[in-house]
Amino acid sequence: MNNKLIPESEGIILAVSKGRILDQALPLLERAGICPKEDVNKSRKLVIETTRAGLHLVVIRPTDVPTFVEYGAADLGITGKDVLMEHDSSDYYEPLDLKIAKCRLMVAGLPGVEVSNNRIRVATKYAKIARDYYAKRGIQAEIIKLYGSMELAPLVGLSERIVDLVDTGNTLKANGLVPMEDICEISSRLIVNKAAMKTKHALIKQLIVTIEDSLR
Ligand code: ATP
Ligand code: PRP
Image 1 (cartoon, helix red, strand yellow):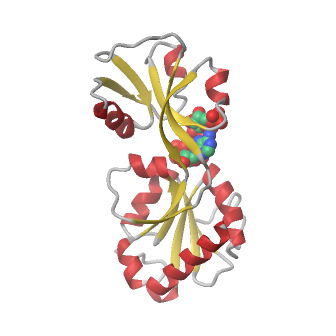
Image 2 (cartoon, rainbow, N blue to C red):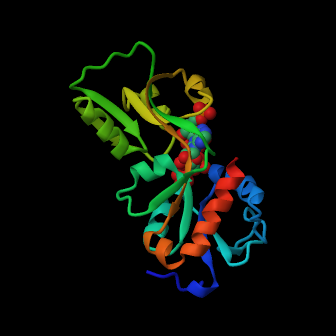
């Protein structure tokens, strides 16, 4: 699918995740000479022009980024590796690790709470990742899907474990939880629509090289 708002001849759309990733992506893009022409945190506009001719930004929820890119509604996207791993498909290219919004995906719980391998409840926003993680270890886990505040689950008896992102460890500590197992490192990635990589190759390749240079 081609995005209709921006004709192919007129440029490309980069979808950037709102929130924490946007805060860290903006300085990175600025180093690459790409500045939004409006304040992305204040503007109500959904498609924002940048100082790089032909490059438009859309700022959307992190979990929506792979969907926009796979359908070609955005040519490129920036979102967390956690979001990409949890997404149902991976029909896009992932040329760059932007090394921003770094954290770790971990298993955590209350200290001293033992669990049996046949009876463990795990609360998480990352149901797919958690299911794969326990299945690989031959552990029968009941995955309880939550949409936030995972740290609360062990405190109120909803689960024995959580799978969540950990950075400073302050959120775990503040709730009396401890990190138990490391699943993987997380950072934000640049992803690219497969068809656009062919049809808009020069524009996209140039942009990837510019962003890659600004990482150094
Ligand atoms: P949504 O509103 O769509 O659920 P969210 O609330 O998870 O998004 P953020 O908290 O801004 O949005 O997190 C977005 C991304 O930032 C995560 O997917 C992850 O890649 C990264 N991230 C989340 N928490 C941390 C953290 N504590 N330290 C570093 N990076 C983080
Ligand atoms: C994330 C994550 C943890 C916290 C970890 O939540 O879900 O709760 O950060 O970071 P820390 O180890 O530095 O404390 P976030 O602050 O994004 O809030 P959310 O639950 O609304 O996504």
